[in-house]
Every structure is written in C-alpha cells, then in structure tokens.
Length: 235
Image 1 (cartoon, rainbow, N blue to C red):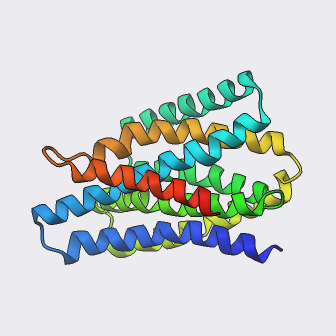
Image 2 (image 1 turned 90 degrees about the vertical axis):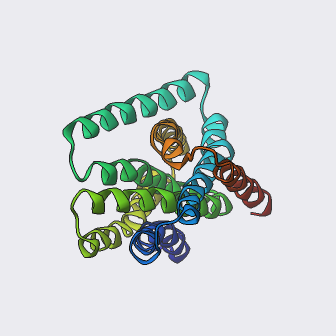
C-alpha cells in the first residue's frame, strides 16, 4: 500500500475537519464585527481562487492532454449539468445535509483522480492533493456554518466532518488500484470534476464570498489563484 498516497490524500481530507474547526472558532469564539465578516469572506474568496487554479492548471490541462475535443466537451458538460441537477434537487428538498453532499460531490471524484495519477505522475499527485486540501477549507467552512444554523449541534457536525475527512484516503486508494492503468478514464474523471466544480464555484462559493463595498475579498481570490500558480511552478 503506497504510504505517500495515504499521506497526500490524508492531508487533502484532513482539511475538511480543519475547515469545520475554523468555522466553529469564527462563529462561536470571535465576536461579530466588520473585521470578522471581512476575514470570513476573504477566506472563502481565497479558496475560490485556489479552486480556480486547480481547474486551470491541473484538472483541465490533464484532460486536454489525454482526450480529444469531443471527449473534453462531453465530460466537462456532463459534470456541469449533473452537478446542477443534483444541486437543484438538494436545494428543493430543503435537506439539512444538502450543503454537505454538495461539498462531497467534488471531493470524492478529485480524490479518485488523485489516486489514479499517483502511480504515473507523483509530482502532479502532490500538487493535486494540495489543491484539493486547500479547496476543502472554504467548502467545509461554509458547510459547517450552514449545518449548525440549520439545527445540527457543533459536536455532531464536527464528528461528521472528522469521519468525512477519511473519504479522501479511501477514494484515492480506489483510484490508485482500479484506475492507475487507465489514463483515459482518469482524464475523463478529472474533466468531469472540472465541470462540476466550476458550476459549484460560480453558483455557491463566489456569491457567498461577496461583500458589498469591500474589495479585499476579490483580492483574496486573486491571491488564492497566485498560490496555485506558484505551486505549479515549484512542484
């Protein structure tokens, strides 16, 4: 069993729990103030920049390298449309778990792709693990706050997030042992995830991170994207 893959995916998954801890700290241990609102929204926009860099630098380029035009168009469109349909279904159901399921929709396929890529391109797998981990922070941050506001206790929500943090390792191992010899399928999976992630980014994360008459949040998104560019250059 590849220890490095477990470490990579373990980091990517651990940030689900860390995001919940950060949300709990901000919501229950820091007094409401304009500065607090700016910090929360800037963190979310920073995460949006990270997610965008993952799409632009890793997920989409990998799909373009392996697939033809129709393959990229098909997988990307299928991901965007499927995530839209699931998002609409979850929103209409009013389920308390809707925001949590939305977060997992991109985490699981990305982790499977991480495991598949690991055997072929370990450096790319490391970069993808960093991207997944960093994007999980704002998503879990927002999900935690929504769940607690909908009636879940802090302890129960943190327990759920702790359990979900291991999904990354499980998904990565599945991808490694089942898909590492199938780069074409992996490319379809990464492109599919790209379409879905971009939908969620524009539908949920960017609107949530916006503050009226505040420009720091937009700067946070730009800095998040820069972190992804630097990561790609260094790794």
